[in-house]
Figure 1 (tube, rainbow, N blue to C red):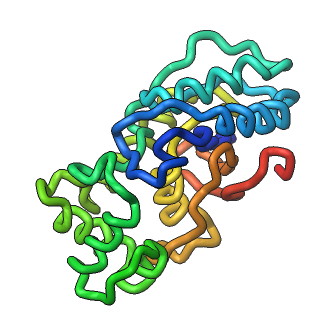
Figure 2: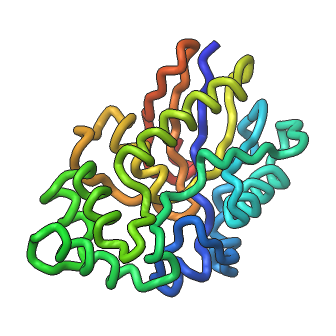
Amino acid sequence: MKTEVYLVRHGETLFNRLNKVQGWCDTPLTIKGIDDLKKTADALSQIHFDNMYSSDLKRAIDTVHLMKDANQVSNIGKIKKLPEFREVFYGSFEGGSIDDIWLGVSKAAGIPATTDVKKIIDTIGIYKFREVTKKADPLHLAESTEELETRMCRAIKVLRKETSGEGRVLLVSHGDFIKTLGIKYWKESDGLHDITFPDNGSVSRGILDEEGNFEIVDYNCKAEDL
């Protein structure tokens, strides 16, 4: 049985608002974030889901409960948390300025200094980008290409196991993790260069087949446009 997966990015958080790096560290949803999520939840309120899941970070958990509470046609029990779908880890860059991290990464990559992450990725490719980010991290704790690839593959396997027999599910995850999934699994990505960073509260839709193959068929959409 194929499973249709609605991947929702959590709502805006305090660190999103402050332009700070937010991977495994966590900050609360803002009022704007909650208000925007209510629009997503309302647009999905008449879509039946067999189950709902989230990453184990609080901003994702708070988001999935907003989706659950607004849905009028689903009978969802306890939300299961899947740590495999948490955000990309940025090591000692966590909590710092996003502009500062990209300046450091571009310097470590040996390209002209820039705060434009798309320019960095499109210049050196997503795989080298992860390695350079780890190198630029003073403690070298940021997730490497291999570490993130292994976690993504494990995430898909876990999701296939959890959703066996479920036709449609909702899963709340995070911007960079969803984008990285998109680079790998979205049919419109070339698998190397950057793609649009998903908006807070956006929905990306994927299909998970019986053999565990995953494909993203809609990416970074407003819920009402699906």
